[in-house]
Image (cartoon, rainbow, N blue to C red; front, side, top):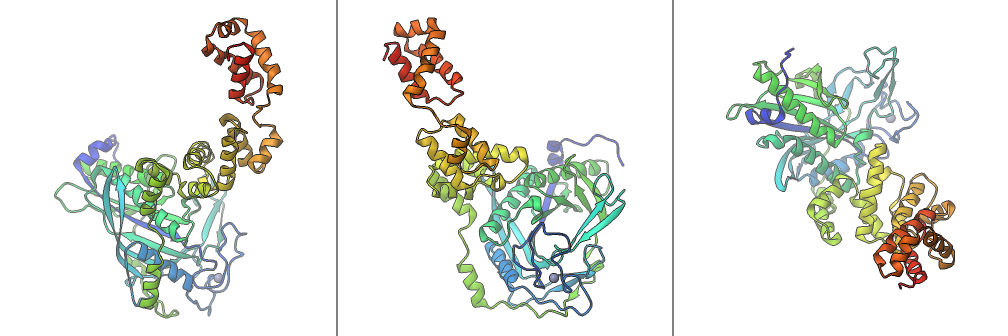
Length: 499
Ligand SMILES: [Zn+2]
């Protein structure tokens, strides 16, 4: 262990060239598991979605899930891959308590999809990320370590296993090494995962939620001196958000450059990303393919997708997210940069649906990217789970457009909607939040404000109409923001003979 201070990021990328690679696991949203009929609902009571096949009991035989194969082919096609006309599943042998079969049914040298690419944009420049392979496998169960301080096995008094997740179809997407991106490596990695997430979400084959683990990312990073061979890579696991992808690459570049500066060799190893500190810690030394003793799965027939079926799936692919973003940016009258923020916030579909429910593009974007995005950030949930629906946001904006709510009141109504108090109109009447524009009801407040501020009233009477603003403010204060400001102003001017 060296004690010298870590180099600054800018110094590190000035001396070394990073090469990154990403392995992403996507849990498919099929109704049943990969090789059995067990349900796949997230959050079910532990060990209630299991059967002899996914528990690996003797004599149980797997049958492949056609919907999972179809979803994997569609992902491959959307990533511009070639689809194998014939391939097999393979056994990846290792013992782990959360894997009751003691092997994982995966693919090895015969992946279903190969040789694709994804284009991503960073700082206005396009980068092509090569896709080496997309293959199909099954997920493991989950271990839960209790009694320790950290939830890790170290210090735990007991460990529990939940096999509900064991056997859920998992697609692994592996990029080719990405060289030549220099200091932008962390941003390119993040942009790739974001684009991949959007593409897969557009296919409707997974909910791709990083915080629930349905999209999980391992990031490989190596450094080399300019003109020299690529260095030894490390693999960082546990990267559970887009922001963490960026931080993990950055911290690994800094850490490795510090070691290389000191003449220390980099070992190929698995490291774990630490959300709290933003750096990586060593895990186990990396197994190589030979450790797994792969062999073709004898209990399953080969997968041989018919060319006509693949062509049909290709023809039916949805609009590419980047193309859709460009089209919507033009329709909504916003810049590419603003559209990128909308996409990064996961708000594209939400705004689209809000507009479809009757709101203007500007009105829809204002609520989702303002108040609701702030709330989602504060509470750490996805925007889509913030508690308001596109229909409710459209109804809220309609109340504003009709003058029944002003901005301030609308924010309070939205608070009620998010808290589950009902639709905007219901919250408005239950909380008594409507704008008061009835002149009869406002006259008393106006007279009171004039009587309390004789100097200002005199100025307005003398024709200094701008001074009326202070009186409007006084009325808004006594009516707790519920008065219609325009009506109040008209009333004041009328009362003071300045209209
Ligand atoms: Zn099962």
